[in-house]
Image 1 (cartoon, one colour):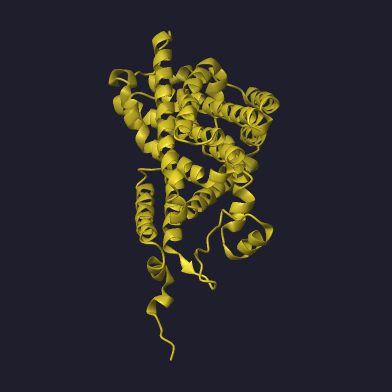
Image 2: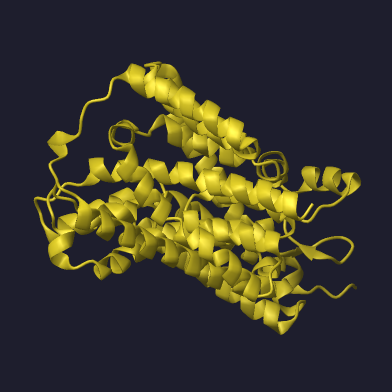
Length: 404
């Protein structure tokens, strides 16, 4: 009679004994981290829209290893390393997230869909009303994007890889996905993971960085009633003109530009059914599958790649420098502004829409219960999307010209 091993029926447990001890320990750590990130999302310490599906995907993929017929160990989630057509057809039939990754991640479609939804919920009133202040602060908030590039090269990354991880400093997840696919496809998966994990953590970490601003300045009241009204026609014209100019200057990023401004244009055209569709099913559906698929990509083999530690450090440097840059810009504008100005608005120029604007308002309210700066913060917040897209276009086009 054939010997029956009870673990054959529970292969998730069996595979702990079939891999190297380091991988087994790594799996346990990542399973626990998946639990922890899910909990933090549930408690809304971190962004729940990202962290709950990401954490559960991470937990599932590291718990769900099994032994295939050929004796290979793997999962039924996704294989991002498929390189030829025969393999791709096989995994499209086996891995349940493979179609989403292949047809939405590897070509940047998921990033474009997220931008469509974000555009449909974006208010551009204050950006149009105060373009100089908004763009000034957004330029300072690119500090991390610019200075992380040479730092990454000191870490041993190539120019293209350095530019790709530097884009994390713009705090714009879809832009990081799009840029890393164009610049460094070989490390796209770990960069995407680093980007979205850190972007969610921004919501928890930036309030501490905001303490670099003295409390008396964090509580400065701004007259939100002074924000001028901008007509829907003016906002629509703004979208069309800016879209045309940006696509002419940086065609490599034109899919993202077109999706973002199309979303804004539909919102301002007063087409309720389209607006509801883009701001609801498109935005939340794409964000959900983006987060869950990223979680499923966080297998122990990917996370334990030595380059991931470098990317984690560089991503932290990029976002910290961008936060400091935004604060410096806010303090400079406060110093020379003739009207009351809260320097926390500079922190909102980091283009994680609308999270950093909400962080700025949250910190300001904590310093002064009468302080309402959210309308002012949204201008630099949207300007940050534009400046990050411009930097992405410069990086992709410039590096391809210099290093064909």
